[in-house]
Each structure stands twice: as structure tokens, then as C-alpha cells.
Length: 534
Image (tube, rainbow, N blue to C red; front, side, top):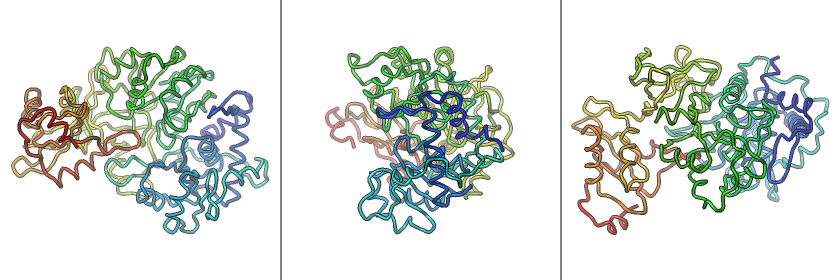
């Protein structure tokens, strides 16, 4: 048995050492480590009473709440595999995950009850059990989670006497990827991986027992669950948990609870910066503000620094969690860097044949070490594509300088070849986003008879104004080689995105291939452009 690699053991240990220490604050409720441990054992007893055994999957589709964390910890307590599910999924996406993960139990919030009830004929495949947190609709065939869990005191004799894992390579979580390239993949994450991720986060955040970690990101993603919540429990810190992100509530709680650590995606920080200065609160308690999940511009970093959010950046993925990180000072001395590798990881760059690339050249980021996923659930083909020769191929292309700092170039799947030349859409997007009328851009490669592939740019404009395609093409030609200039443009009000705000390029790619490259619309007035914007 390796109890010290089990997150439920960490909570139990802190309940013995500091039982009255606050583990969790949520909507006015304060839960000590002793109370949290008791709740976890109670939930573990309930799971076992339902017949949940080691290796069974427990799927949970809840907003951030104590119940989410209690089930997460209880599943680890008995060796069940926790499957967090994005509550924003459309019915077909949800059905796919349930069919792929094949959970024994599916727990969801009462706000989702009607949606789940309509899916019940599709998802109620024996032996799947359905449990509802909150008010259960009258007549619905759901287990009442809140009522049933209260029947257990955590001391029932059938509770397993040991904490998993007996082997650190045992699965703890199946976390589904965001689906930016099609059907989501279920990354199988082990107890050992969670443990070493926590060690990396401890170093990155400079975590201490006295820290207060604010979580505004959803727990169904790696950022909230593995970069914030799990490391905080490892150190015996206090979590301040928000059910959803609200800028004013974030400011209020940072001041009221003297929050020391926070993680957000660019969208979160942009929303915080949009709050009028007169309404913002005291941020002096903040020691580490981290950002990750999507493109971070120098402008955003500068604005955050001026507002009191001194950002350090993380880069990672579901399959590895934190992989690279950059300090506050790195942003000043190494503009554009995504940082250097975390302590517990071996990170390298390789070419298409798996050979290391020299300093300054583009290669794919590959990883070795204890932070790797075990496999993709029920998907040996994509597992073999990603895990090769003991390395995890991230699909991210980057350069590395002589001091070991990485600079992200693009995704392997996003790169296209035009006339024999490699084109990295991220480079073209950065140029387009420097245009005064462009708010955001996304570029994909589309088939072309003459060049093999050419670029097609999807563009969001500022203030509803739209430059013509010829204007944008000329802007790019002045800054890029001709083969990199997009041959078509589509104007959009927004892009299809994942829950963390990442652009779903496979959706844009499909749209570009259906409609082809948009013709140049010629000179137009700004008013006409505004009316024509989609």
C-alpha cells in the first residue's frame, strides 16, 4: 500500500494534525479538515453501499461545490476511478463520454435533472446508477444524494480498512480532453501522477500550510482540480471555492479571506480588468497570480501587472498537467516565453523522426517522467500515437533558446504546408491581431489546387468594424512571407470554444472547407463593414 500517494489520506492526515484548520470555504460555509475527512468517509461508505468497488468509474457532473470534492476524495478513498464531466456538454457529447467511460454511478446537480431525465433511456444502461445532488424532481428515477449520504456516519463496518493505491500506477481519474480535435479522449491519470503534479505545483506556487487558494476555474478541468485543489489539500492549505466565476465576488473574497494564490485563464483576467477601478478591492494579500490555458499577450500581462496581478505563466495539458512555467521576471527578460520545465518532468523537443532538435529550431514538445498519463481510456490506437518510446508527444511545436526557455510556435495538427513551406497559424494570428481593427484571429489550412494548402483566417473585429480582406492581406504581406498570407477571410462575432475559452479549430476548419475562401469584398465604408459583420 502507498497510502501517502492517496489524496484522501492527505485530508485524513491533516484532520489528525490540525483538525480545526479550515480546509474549505464555500458560499458562507466553513469546513474544517476534520469535518471534510468525516464527510469523505461518509461518502465513501455510501459509495460502497451502492456496490461501487475498486476500479469502478464514478462520473460526476456538478458545478464547483463541496459535494464535488467529497465524491472526488471518496472515490480515491476506496479505489474507484473518478470521472469529472463538463456540465456545459451538449447531449450527444455527454452520451459519448458515458458510453466510453461506462461508469457504475453518475452524479449530477438538480439543475441538470430534467436534461438527464430526457436522456435516461439512453444513459440508464444497467448497471448505471443515477444520483442527483439537490432537489430531486418528483417521480424521477434518481437516487437522492444529499438524503442518502447523511445516513452514513463514516464508521460503518463495511468501509474498506485501507486506502488505495496498492500500486501507485493504479488509475485515480479519467479526465476527458476538451475535444479541440474531435471526440474527447479520456486521459487515465494515476495516483502517482497526481502526487508528482502536486509536488510541481508546490514549487510553482510556493505553497505553504498558511496559504489561501481561490478557485474560480471549473473543477472538471485540470487547472482547478490538479493545479489548485489537490496541491492545496497536499499542503493543508485553505480553499476558497466559487461555484462560478464572478469578477466582483472574486475581488470581494480576495480581500475578505486574504487570498494568497489564484489561477485564471486570460478570459478571467480580462473580466477582472473590466471592473471599474473604484469598485476593485485590496489585492495586497496576493502572492502568486498564475495564468494559463490560452494565448497570453504582452498587453494583457502589462495591464494585469499595473492592476496588482503579477502574473506567472503555466503551460500544460490534461495528459501532463503543469509542464512549463515562467516567473514574473521571465516575462520581462524573455518576452514571449512559456517558460522552462517544471522540476518533476523531463521535457525535450524532437523532429518527426523523434530526434532531438538543436537550439533555436522548431520541434515537438515531448515529455518523460512521473507526470504522464497512463493511457487513453478504451483507445489503444490514440494511446499508441501519443505515448511512444516512453515519451508523451504533446502535439505542441516550440523553439528553445540556449538557456532552456521554450517559445510556443503552434500545434502539430494546426501546422499546414503551403508550396512545400511549413506555415504555423499562431505566427499569422499574432500578426493579424496587431491590426488596429482586429480583436482576435484564428487561422486554419485548407486544400488548394496550386499550393496544396493555403491559409484561411477567421477574424473577430473590434467595435463591430470590419476591414476588407484586401486590407488584411496587405497588412500581412508587409509583415510575413507571401506563402504565409491567408488567401481567404471569414468575419465572425465569436469562435466556437471549449469551456476554458480555447478555440475549437476543427470546427473552423470544417467551416472553411465547406465554404471555401471568401472573395475580397473590395473597398467599403466603416459603417458598411459594421453592418456586414457576422
